[in-house]
Image (tube, rainbow, N blue to C red; front, side):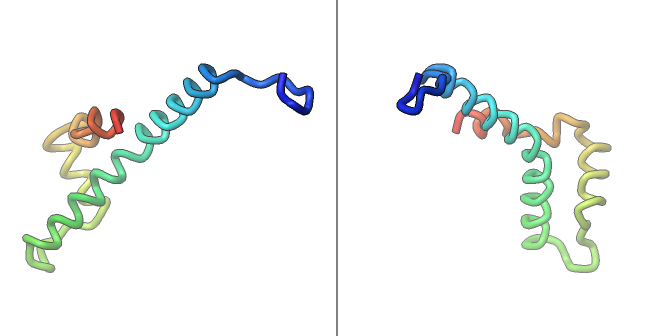
Length: 80
């Protein structure tokens, strides 16, 4: 019970909820970050006429690497 008389979750449960919400948001947004990073890198190394847009990047990535390719590098991100 906090100062206002309302029940609080407690430290451990609050910590667990925060960790769970952070992990879930990372799982949802990570594939978009992967595509964004690949698009930025290709801008440095590929001629403008041969560059892929975001949708093309997703299609090529899924075809060549599968869903695992979208989540490559996820464990270090979750440990952050």
